[in-house]
Length: 229
Image 1 (cartoon, rainbow, N blue to C red):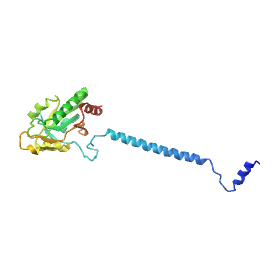
Image 2 (image 1 turned 90 degrees about the vertical axis):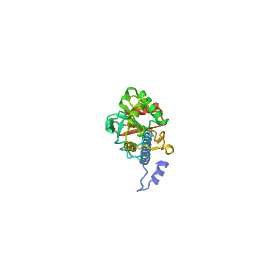
Image 3 (image 1 turned 180 degrees about the horizontal axis):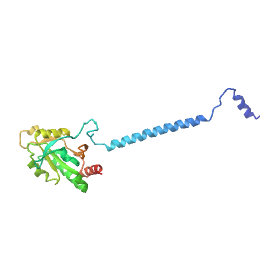
Image 4 (image 1 turned 135 degrees about the horizontal axis):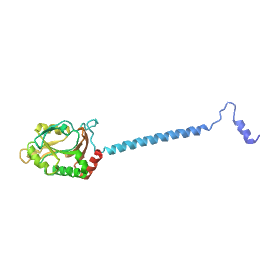
């Protein structure tokens, strides 16, 4: 017997279990499982990040339970032809809706012009979307006055007004702020402070997204077409 074998035989005492080669295998398996777990966490994080990016700038809808609460809901107003309308009259079609007033010096004309341009950019798809302008100044914005005003911007633009109570109720469901300027509240040429947002509402009346004053018509059109496709 060689000297190497003899040494090995002496070291292997009776009852002593020799180390096996299974340990490296088990260690490799543990490392593999750990690696799979790390990759899984990374994938989940990427998905969450992507979803958050997709929803960036979007307010939660009626069924989302988000912190902002629900946006949109029932309303009763009068259109620029003198007809009483509610949210049910727009059922089955998308609404591109904004609040303002006809005596607004800058923001409202800019928003309405942007809406009109965005609809033009949509081409045939624009027929699925009804542009709506709700006045927050019912004292001056009568149906007759609205009829002339909306005609300056788009042939399909619907102008809506109503009693102060009806207008306040509509603004409330869309979480729109408005207030008469205190500096000239008693004058005939007073101004109104109000939210400068445009809303996209679905055919079922559910809020989809909102557009801030800072975006341009092209971006608005792109975001709308993503919903329509």
